[in-house]
Amino acid sequence: MNNDLLNNIIRFIFLVTLQVLLLDHIQFGGFINPYLYIFFILLLPFETPKALLLVLAFILGFTIDIFSNTYGLHAAATVFMTFWRPSILKRISSRQAYEPGMRPVLSDLGFMWVFFYSFILISIHHCFLFFIEVFSFRDFWFTFGRSVFSILFTLLLVMLSQYFFFKKKK
Image (cartoon, rainbow, N blue to C red; front, side):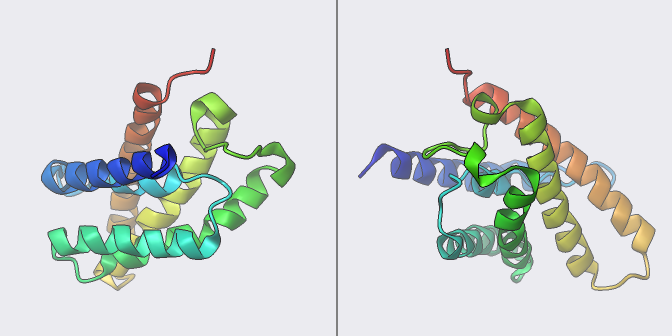
């Protein structure tokens, strides 16, 4: 088994466990719900085939749904976010900027690129998740507020995780 595959399996298990045992129980006034588990999809290599990305996203979201009793909400939101990932990557930088083996981490692409990339995909995920959860636009501003606060908190966790787990190349 190659090293990247093993690292991704460990990352998957760690993020799902962290999400289910700790982060699912964090709710500040009903406004902040961090969903760090999507960090797994954010970190996958650029050359990962789109079909594999979508299958991994479904498995990740469905795993969270099983433990959270959310009936497919996380699977749908994670697949939706992952569907847009290749398009977002094309829009924010040229394909020639990626070298084989590069990952969307600070040490490879810098703070601003990773921040922008993460912000866009986290926003897509969270807005889709929160609006499909209420399945109505009746309380639009409340749902939008929940999305914004959760996006910012999740983005903070993603950026801090980048600093803690991915050291700068020397």
